[in-house]
Length: 467
Image 1: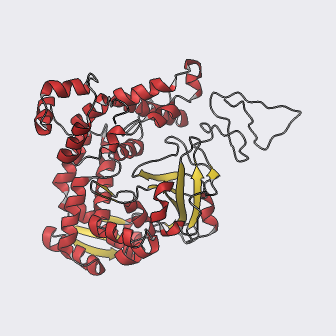
Image 2: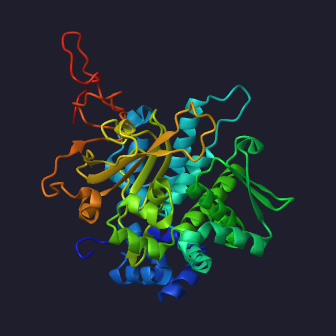
Image 3: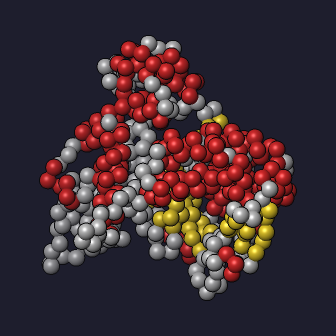
């Protein structure tokens, strides 16, 4: 911090607005004058180490979220991906302008990302004559909102940890959850035939105050369903305040955010923060042992590992993806670094895809992104919660990863030469990847000139000019 001035006005202003504070109120809580805070937000003064420490102390805030390049939300990597689109090729926008936009106008950068997501959706689903163009899809908006919070919600964590303590031992959590629903809220739980739920895995009947769970749910999924319903009623006021603060753009996004926050709370009830982090560190992040200790599924444990970002008690900052056999991404969470495409799929050279060939087995790999970042990754298959037709493929693949510097803390890294590892070069979506000699390339990078010749065949079906 002594080597460069930290001009973080846009990010500081965004933080203040997310907290719902006026400049005067925030200045008072930080022990600053309103005029000084105003200078900080307008980048007329650099943010000092003392102010960063005060922010962390008063708001239980991770200062890395302010000082990391691009900050939270839409950073330089996402803007670079957006402006790599061929329609911007003639603008030749330099990187320093993208850095300035992410640093000084994060809300504008976020709006650009939202517009681009809407554009992609409109391209996929062109509107008929007289119809409005598609708005950003609710799942994209919710995913972006969760990522701006670094997939960690302190107030939900605290409430869930208190509730988990009241429920007692995890070995008897199902009965404790049932009792809490019945005695606290008059909700009765029934296990019913899947035919009665018409394709749903669970359904709450408001009139009869009855929670119906599919008989096809596995025990760990049944526990999660009970915890989800309890979170909906137990944390209703808290979740409502969080939704209002997030200001979803439409009702579908509001409902999906409500469901996502309740899912987060359910995971925090079943895998309470402090005990889970202590066990994760003790067991060196052995997923199977954590599943056994907490009676949870591989997917539940994997998802929970991406949320361990409490100030003063952090776990390994994992990112996680879930894909189907066709490569469609259905979950994408990150506790810290997240090197993959925000708007596209994943690199075929990452062995997340080959996990389908070894069901139930953890497959490890060290990958390197084009900018030189290295990540230790773990991939394995999981089963869908419910499979209505036994002839259907029920497998999905989970990919977990973290910066290579954290690998010594992982059981899965034993046996690797981390000082001089064998790495696999990967990239983001093919349209963004600058790697020239890739035999699995499916498209040339946007804005690059193809060098196809009828007299020469290359290992890549799309050779292009580098530089």
